[in-house]
Image 1 (tube, rainbow, N blue to C red):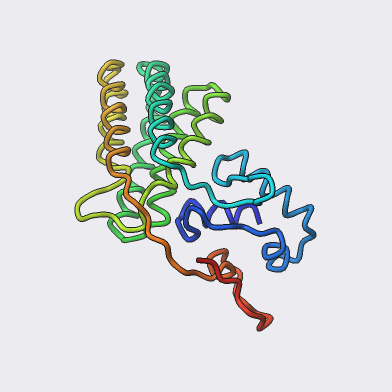
Image 2: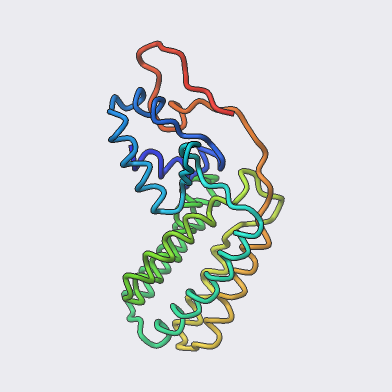
Length: 225
């Protein structure tokens, strides 16, 4: 259940603001409600689900102020990542990062939006992992996951919420051991990501289908708006 819901959120099959009821999820997965609560609590710790007292759980839908605060914090943390990585990476590290960027570009060009979104987010997490600070990795994983929710389901022409070309510019600066340029490129990239955020329109969907669980029993689908 955790993997299904997390993937559906990150790939925008479940839109921000979606209510996740313990009863509906328990019926879909055949689990007791206390097990569902454990999964929702873990998703909340990841920053992709919000749990409010007496209101239950829903997929996080950051407002404008929170979005500004998150990108401001990402600027600070990812500048630190650049500082730690410049001059410290080996050939195998650069090759791995270039492969990730190539996979991101390929997914985008093939129109595989879910994979592209996931790879775009993973790029930032992989950089943090290379920096070797687990607390930094955990902090950025939460921030990256939550800011990924801000990407619109439909991009305006010619815009990419998290560009692979900008990722390449960051890696090129790191390869050249240019700490200042690497920090500049990352700062510019995060500014562009923030500027590309777009409002999401509401839409109707079937919870079972979004989670990859077809309605094999013939019961009524669980609809959300």
